[in-house]
Length: 142
Image (cartoon, rainbow, N blue to C red):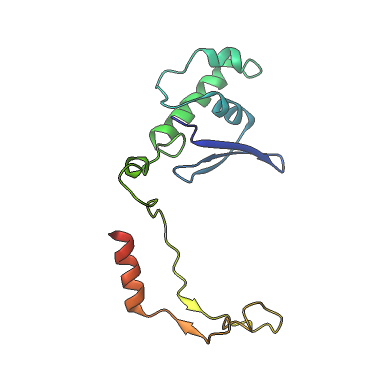
Protein backbone atom coordinates (compact mmCIF):
# COMPACT_ATOMS: atom_id res chain seq x y z
CA UNK A 1 0.00 0.00 0.00
CA UNK A 2 1.30 3.46 -0.80
CA UNK A 3 1.58 6.09 1.87
CA UNK A 4 -1.70 7.94 2.21
CA UNK A 5 -0.39 10.91 4.18
CA UNK A 6 1.74 13.95 3.54
CA UNK A 7 3.49 15.77 6.35
CA UNK A 8 4.82 19.28 6.30
CA UNK A 9 5.68 22.21 8.52
CA UNK A 10 4.22 25.62 7.71
CA UNK A 11 4.85 28.74 9.81
CA UNK A 12 5.96 26.57 12.72
CA UNK A 13 2.80 24.41 12.59
CA UNK A 14 3.06 20.64 12.12
CA UNK A 15 0.52 19.49 9.55
CA UNK A 16 -0.48 15.97 8.47
CA UNK A 17 -2.78 15.57 5.46
CA UNK A 18 -4.60 12.32 4.72
CA UNK A 19 -4.79 12.23 0.93
CA UNK A 20 -7.72 9.84 0.57
CA UNK A 21 -10.08 11.27 3.19
CA UNK A 22 -9.03 14.88 2.68
CA UNK A 23 -8.43 15.20 6.42
CA UNK A 24 -6.06 18.00 7.43
CA UNK A 25 -4.64 17.67 10.94
CA UNK A 26 -2.65 20.35 12.77
CA UNK A 27 -0.67 18.30 15.27
CA UNK A 28 2.16 18.50 17.76
CA UNK A 29 5.72 17.34 17.06
CA UNK A 30 5.18 13.89 18.56
CA UNK A 31 2.19 13.09 16.34
CA UNK A 32 4.05 14.55 13.35
CA UNK A 33 7.14 12.40 13.98
CA UNK A 34 5.14 9.26 14.75
CA UNK A 35 2.98 9.61 11.64
CA UNK A 36 6.19 9.55 9.60
CA UNK A 37 7.17 6.22 11.15
CA UNK A 38 3.87 4.39 10.59
CA UNK A 39 2.53 2.48 7.59
CA UNK A 40 -0.97 1.04 7.30
CA UNK A 41 -2.53 -1.23 8.24
CA UNK A 42 -2.22 -0.17 11.87
CA UNK A 43 -2.93 -2.56 14.69
CA UNK A 44 -4.46 -1.79 18.07
CA UNK A 45 -1.18 -2.71 19.76
CA UNK A 46 1.52 -0.09 19.38
CA UNK A 47 4.71 -1.33 17.68
CA UNK A 48 7.32 -1.41 20.46
CA UNK A 49 9.97 -0.05 18.06
CA UNK A 50 8.30 3.37 18.42
CA UNK A 51 9.64 3.72 22.00
CA UNK A 52 13.23 3.59 20.71
CA UNK A 53 12.56 5.59 17.55
CA UNK A 54 10.87 8.37 19.53
CA UNK A 55 13.29 8.31 22.47
CA UNK A 56 13.14 12.11 22.87
CA UNK A 57 9.55 11.79 24.14
CA UNK A 58 8.34 10.15 27.41
CA UNK A 59 7.15 6.56 26.87
CA UNK A 60 3.69 7.21 28.32
CA UNK A 61 3.17 10.10 25.88
CA UNK A 62 4.29 7.91 22.96
CA UNK A 63 1.78 5.23 23.95
CA UNK A 64 -1.03 7.77 24.40
CA UNK A 65 -0.19 9.39 21.08
CA UNK A 66 -0.30 6.04 19.27
CA UNK A 67 -3.72 5.37 20.78
CA UNK A 68 -4.99 8.70 19.42
CA UNK A 69 -3.52 8.01 15.97
CA UNK A 70 -5.10 4.56 16.01
CA UNK A 71 -8.51 6.09 16.78
CA UNK A 72 -8.14 8.43 13.78
CA UNK A 73 -7.16 5.41 11.69
CA UNK A 74 -10.27 3.52 12.81
CA UNK A 75 -12.39 6.61 12.03
CA UNK A 76 -10.86 6.59 8.51
CA UNK A 77 -9.48 10.11 8.69
CA UNK A 78 -5.78 9.18 8.97
CA UNK A 79 -4.05 6.50 6.88
CA UNK A 80 -7.38 5.93 5.15
CA UNK A 81 -7.84 3.63 2.17
CA UNK A 82 -8.37 4.83 -1.38
CA UNK A 83 -12.06 4.13 -1.90
CA UNK A 84 -11.66 4.63 -5.66
CA UNK A 85 -8.85 2.09 -6.17
CA UNK A 86 -11.45 -0.67 -6.70
CA UNK A 87 -12.65 1.16 -9.82
CA UNK A 88 -9.18 1.58 -11.36
CA UNK A 89 -9.30 -1.63 -13.39
CA UNK A 90 -12.86 -1.21 -14.66
CA UNK A 91 -13.01 2.52 -15.34
CA UNK A 92 -11.91 3.85 -18.70
CA UNK A 93 -11.55 7.31 -17.18
CA UNK A 94 -10.82 8.29 -13.61
CA UNK A 95 -13.97 8.29 -11.47
CA UNK A 96 -15.52 11.62 -10.60
CA UNK A 97 -14.80 12.33 -6.96
CA UNK A 98 -16.31 15.81 -6.83
CA UNK A 99 -18.15 18.32 -8.96
CA UNK A 100 -18.13 22.11 -8.90
CA UNK A 101 -21.11 23.74 -10.56
CA UNK A 102 -20.67 27.25 -11.96
CA UNK A 103 -24.21 28.37 -11.20
CA UNK A 104 -23.77 32.08 -11.80
CA UNK A 105 -21.81 33.56 -14.70
CA UNK A 106 -21.85 37.03 -13.21
CA UNK A 107 -19.92 39.25 -10.84
CA UNK A 108 -21.39 42.24 -9.05
CA UNK A 109 -18.12 44.18 -8.70
CA UNK A 110 -18.00 45.27 -12.38
CA UNK A 111 -14.29 46.15 -12.27
CA UNK A 112 -13.22 47.82 -15.53
CA UNK A 113 -9.75 46.16 -15.46
CA UNK A 114 -11.04 42.61 -14.82
CA UNK A 115 -10.21 39.74 -17.16
CA UNK A 116 -13.90 38.81 -16.98
CA UNK A 117 -15.02 41.92 -18.86
CA UNK A 118 -16.73 43.68 -15.94
CA UNK A 119 -18.14 40.40 -14.66
CA UNK A 120 -20.09 38.97 -17.63
CA UNK A 121 -17.06 37.17 -19.11
CA UNK A 122 -17.85 38.81 -22.45
CA UNK A 123 -20.91 36.64 -23.03
CA UNK A 124 -23.62 38.29 -20.98
CA UNK A 125 -24.77 37.65 -17.43
CA UNK A 126 -26.16 34.15 -16.99
CA UNK A 127 -27.55 31.91 -14.25
CA UNK A 128 -27.65 28.11 -14.53
CA UNK A 129 -31.11 26.73 -15.15
CA UNK A 130 -32.59 24.31 -12.60
CA UNK A 131 -32.80 21.69 -15.39
CA UNK A 132 -29.05 21.89 -16.04
CA UNK A 133 -28.35 21.66 -12.30
CA UNK A 134 -30.55 18.55 -11.97
CA UNK A 135 -28.84 16.94 -14.99
CA UNK A 136 -25.42 17.60 -13.46
CA UNK A 137 -26.44 16.05 -10.13
CA UNK A 138 -28.01 13.04 -11.87
CA UNK A 139 -24.79 12.59 -13.86
CA UNK A 140 -22.71 12.67 -10.68
CA UNK A 141 -24.97 10.14 -8.95
CA UNK A 142 -24.94 7.82 -11.98
